[in-house]
Length: 169
Length: 156
Image (tube, rainbow over all chains, first blue to last red; front, side):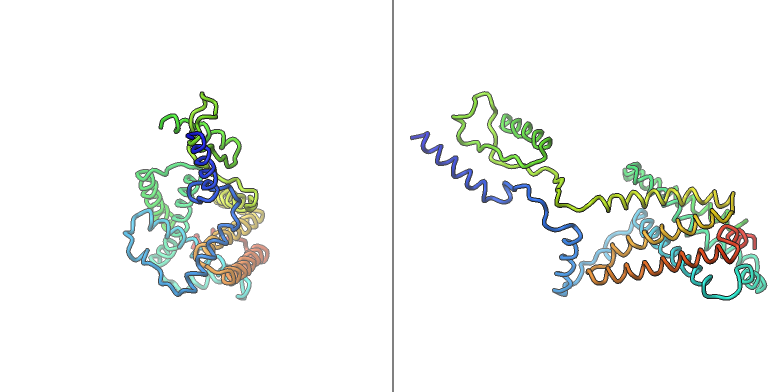
């Protein structure tokens, strides 16, 4: 009698084994890629005209956060600047030294020249030093929070010193 | 309980080796299994899927290439300072444009959504990078070149 009951119970468990999703899931390869899933998410929510939850407006800004977005901002800015230079080279008449002499002849004064050099050097050095910080993360080092802050302050210090040094030569 | 967990543990290890789903015997029905085998729970394990239906290694290789290029660009800096020659000019033009192209590509991936918009943005980016590279090469060829230009700019 007990054997009969146990046999029946075992079969029912096997049956439920096949039905219960969260308890037992078969390894089926994913039908969609991550990209497809993301697109589906955006398409659905844009379609429903859902507002986006406040995120950057409410989250407390930290040094790592600001440095991260600055890395992106300097990257975009520098890239834009290079593209501008390239288009100018293609479109504008004359050559580079002419334009330099033109700017120099306008005699803006040494303070202005030093300031412009600083303004050019700052994004380049920040992006470079923070880029090295990123590469260090990419090999898996320096992820502990105190390390993140320490490397961050190092980058900021080096950036400032390098920009000042470059502006003065 | 512990025995069941041990059972689970040994099955876990086996599954990881097999990389497959291993349905387990239900706990009920202990009579007819070997008495020395520990009882197992009616659960199934889904190990990390090395799914053969998944995409290629393209994204991973791209990531590595981005980092290699960044390191190369870092190295080009001091080289450009010490040897301001045309070869370095063109190397910088290529490395800088590609680094910017890939970087802006990541920005698009992060902020632009929707298949049509992504495609349009990437086309625009490609055009921008192409023009940028063309302009830099033109400058290298017809003017003093990137290295000397920076030196000249800084000497003023």
